[in-house]
Image 1: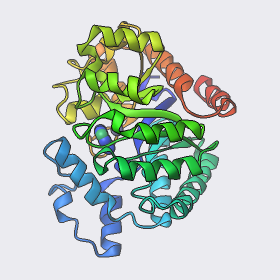
Image 2 (image 1 turned 120 degrees about the vertical axis):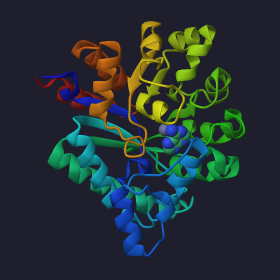
Image 3 (image 1 turned 30 degrees about the horizontal axis):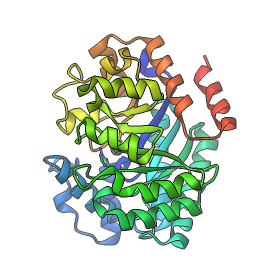
Length: 328
Ligand code: ADE
Ligand code: ZN
């Protein structure tokens, strides 16, 4: 058995960003939406850089218009994840894309997503939990609406709040109200930081949002005091090496800091972010890490244990997933 065959835990997957291009093209056809600028001639997603990626992402997402569309998407992405050996995943789902920030509409989308996920769990043994996602470049007021949706639906399925979007816009602390509301509702917290923003963005996330995990966080490597702080606070990084390489944060897997962060004692985990955008899968991430750093089965097993400990699900779910990870 190769490392890539191991059962896997994934903590950082964007629901819309996991949509295969052919899935989006089919919906565009059904709804008569012109998405020609979204695709390359060979059918992949077309983008030049991070900000352009976000624009293309939102254009592609515009064809996801109903709870039924999200149910179909959920089935497609969980089957793909299960094919890659993923046994537990958390996905970022935005109230902005699921009902425009309206709590009643959001409930309907969540219900449809959850029902679809439970059907795939029954057939393929993969568990999904949701993280509600304010979009940073939509601004703090829209984030408050998203956080209210999250707070109203917090529970054993919707387990976290996690901000995505353009880290170049504003500051983490501009969203403190939303994160406080989510925390008070019992949700766990994460935010994208230290991807396109430098170490200061990660410091802000820790100080101003008091998150327990960081999306990416890899540029923490530029500040030894921050690395020490991540270790001291036991903050877990949701690292997405393939995403970072395609978006140009690092030139190659070999140049990626994941191994140095791990060796410094930081809790690192591996995820795909938006797999079809970045031509990756969980299996490929494992293969590339094994090739770049010589990681073996024990390294990946330890990383999955780290991920499961940092998962936002309840302990009964954690125990169930642990059994799947340990299955021979
Ligand atoms: N939304 C989807 N993918 C993202 C990424 N890599 N960074 C920030 N926001 C995102
Ligand atoms: Zn992300």
